[in-house]
Length: 265
Image (cartoon, rainbow, N blue to C red; front, side):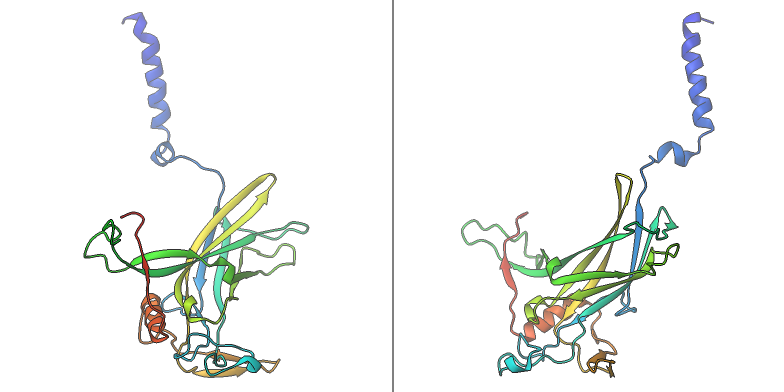
């Protein structure tokens, strides 16, 4: 054998031995750093996996008030409301549930909410651009409305050693009781923990449907403080799409579709 080929053959045999003993999944899939895995399950409409918020409008007037001294014929008193959307929450570290340790911050939760607006794309009269074709009916425009919501995670802590990665997420609507906020919303739940000087993140996505009204409540509960809690049988009935119900309710309240130009057209 040519002595010049000996080193090349040796390297080749080493590589064959290395990859021959390495599972395919290890050889082809790169390994990344630690991450948090986040799961959320809406509790308001478990058949459709949606969170539901009801503003308490009467179906005629676009706004309402909870202050009886400010109620007028044009801004009536709000009807039954449900301003909280609840979601089951699970956060794990590479599949391992987390436990709360005395003196640590634990799991942090940050929420972002994006409103899905439907826009009537109209061609620009000067340039003719804006509508990509006759097939383009409506365009989706995302608007950040995170300031209209507050997220509150509820863990089993502060008892040391108990699971902090399992809990519920209460999402409160704190915006105006105005039909312009009726929409199908995207809820982005971000979780992070700090390990030394490293911040480890994870995220999940869910739906929150903000409606002006949900029909007559099926049942009314009186809470210990004397206020009422309302229970609806099916707030979206008979529709299955929050987007369709939002368009329908906005039309009933006289809120027209906005005109817009598609920046990508």
